[in-house]
Image (tube, rainbow, N blue to C red; front, side):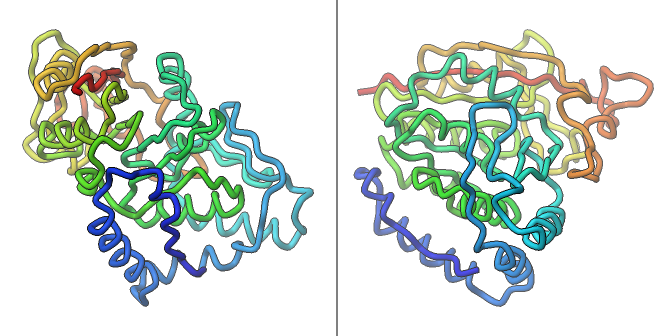
Length: 326
């Protein structure tokens, strides 16, 4: 697979520091074309199926549908199945790729149904998806005709998976770059909507990140924050000794009240906690497409109110806020 640097979409981001962003993109694309072992593996996987193009697209239901089996040969269908299996673990989904059903770890459609009820109109909007993963939410957004959804995703497996899927789908208004949230400071007043779903507790400086995200929103813009949280009404955050629910890259796990305060202290307005629920194994679980440990393995087998480390078991909270700065 040839990873091509297409900068045409940058015209939709006139306030961006295009010189520095282009420098970062050039550096990243040089890496993506390198002979590093991990990069070569993903490129070879995609090479095998990059000729496939989907006629059928349906992003309106819980399953993101790209292609039908009848659109490709039997040999290509078998090859595609092996390629998709080689991209395990599939975290977000579900997907149907040329009628190959991918039951992901997360039932991400449930999150989307909670979020879509409170979103402003996406038509013609410029949107950022931070930690976009394999692009499930980006495809769901595509149904509403945004001008651009720019995904920020530094992990190669997710980046190449999206590249493959959108290679099949051909959605010109969806774009993902293999960069992290650290690059958001290059986009002052650039986005109408920012999605920050399942990310904030993985950041060691969440306040600094929220400040940068607020600067990246246009005046009147909206941020959607979905986060792991701990139960309770006090404005506190848990900071584990080493791991929380077996995940070493978890830092501050706030209560809903604490997260609201973070947003308020960084200048967001119209802050609304619009949904929260206890986590459970029907929402995040092992499947044939995510064969590693999942939620049930993170929770105390004798007391589901605790993690295996003895911390309060997580809830999930959903918050909407706006940047009302002129």
